[in-house]
Length: 338
Picture 1 (cartoon, one colour):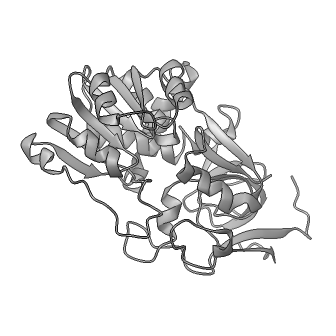
Picture 2 (cartoon, one colour):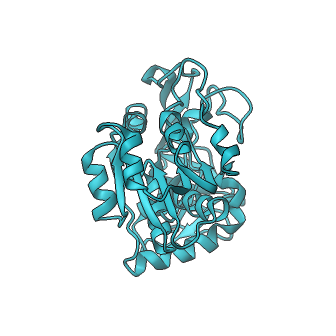
């Protein structure tokens, strides 16, 4: 497609550090002119944005695995874009790419960190889910840190979310018994009936400790943690000898206005000679292709599904992001820009 010379870039910029839950007033929305391309650059029209729990952490000041978003900067986000103008030798008009587009309608880039994707092989939104950063997080977190063995019991929280759903499906393919933890019967039914989990515990219904013990009579060998808080504490009481706990996220803690609560049952790691280790997907960037090829094969063979929850409109960004923290999304949360 050709770009209209009068087109403006609609941006969402972070203007305040949120206290507790992010609010619309923490962001500024503006239409900004587009600059002419220099040699080696291309202009992307952003089609879809990936909304992820990690975005909340990126809004905070302080040391982390990645620099915080600066005040006044366009909010950071992964996305899918279409090349509409190019002075880059490796990208042509009409190519679709994935990378960090940020929350805006257009993006000028030198191509670093962007990869071509094929919309004929999978829907564009799949490249933000199983074939994107959540899928890479799930694959390498489980396979490298969790190192599951066939016959072991793998438990994953946030089981109906982007990372959790993929973790459970991979674990099943690798021959494990898989138990999910999710909020609500509908999400639990989805985990069992669609994703193929062996069981799913609804943390909103009754005593999660008893329910988890009933679902895992032989204990827990691998736990993939997306939520932290009370659920992590409960799991630690039921781990087996040499268990592996993967710390991917702690969504229950991200909007706290008080200090984050760590696990009170951590001595179970000592008693069971278990290991707890964090996973940051960027550490595996050099191996993304390997995982994408394997999981692309599972998708093509019908062994894996990729479910996206798509919401229209870039101006809904603050409210749509909050769906993650209220448990309102069902599948990978994606914002449709065009």
